[in-house]
Length: 498
Ligand code: ADP
Image 1: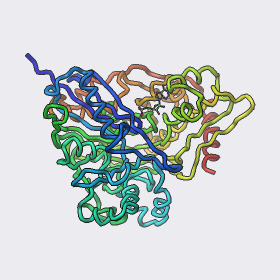
Image 2: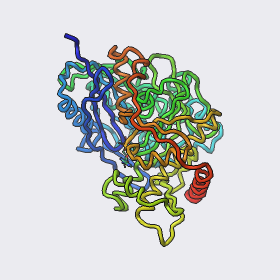
Image 3: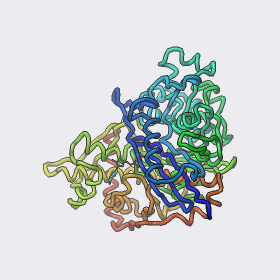
Image 4: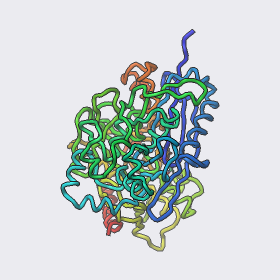
């Protein structure tokens, strides 16, 4: 009898915690999710609870995982390993002994440290040190300023951190801490490279960066390869090795089988994240993209260039929850397709400022070109188009950096299910869009990493065989129309930034 071996992926996103079980051919057997609650205590602030309450990170992840195991009907003894992927940058600080968070989790979207970051960026020496060592652009998005905020605002926190009583983690680290009963405090290079404290070339926390942010090294997790056994958990009824860790976007790059230089993907979730693998070479962007660590199978570093847009699918949620223009996200597709164009309307969803390539914290959401004929369908359509235009800005920067034209973009994430959006994306990029059979590539990447570490999968060539395209969107728009529409977007962006 052959041994059946499964992999479990824990995928803790911004809006939901998911879990999935895969078989040894990379096929998904079950996937369940539980919602994560966000709080917005002030304009631009975004928080989540880590430990208590139904919509908190840990209980939601546990709930989703238990339900997934039940739905898969797999004996936990047959799970070879689990992998974790997570919303990146979101910052947690907790007590080493009690395991209690000392503040709510500060979510990646939160802008509370924008002024602090602007101050840092105004010093050209700090700025060049930070940007050279981390590959990042100084911005409130990354973890370092969020840690600083917690240490500054919770009484005694700085002293307790110095004494080694407090620990920091992104969501991967927090989940592993909880899964191992506080025994293991680790992260991987893909997550570490988003903290702004990690030197992406040396592969270690950097003393100069720690000094700039005044963050004690004692708080920080040990960095282990993305694909390696780093601990075990017994929480699901059997001993399961924890063998994969990756930040959600690098995990999706891996799940899309983008293992070699030039292969690119874009994820349409809450935000949009376009990544191009650059192999063992650290990229240097001249167009305000980020250089980041891709998943590592061993100690050898792997890199990617990344463009991040903060609000993408979240703009569709806004249409539903705040504007009441749609009742569910999927409906936006038919409504957008019911009109031939937006009639010159552009929706720039700069709700929390603009990410790459603008990096403008002060920009705000803007709708331009409204006339008496602007109706619900045109606003819905312009919102979806706004997601595609933002992606175009990222791929333009990638193409300018690499000097090569993008031939194909692999897509995933919740909003990639929207065929109107994908066709418009192909049109506005003038490039083929390929959607794989399994768009849950974030979870898949974590399962692949865990499977490689435990011998369920032999090598990345094996994994590349599993990748299947489900639908290809070819560009149909002529170049004149494409460029004229994109010129209109650029004017709308200028107004959002004014
Ligand atoms: P995350 O991992 O960031 O939580 P997901 O990949 O689950 O995000 O995608 C959820 C996002 O995608 C939501 O913001 C939602 O509004 C959007 N979305 C989901 N389905 C569609 C759809 N059919 N059309 C447009 N947007 C969608």
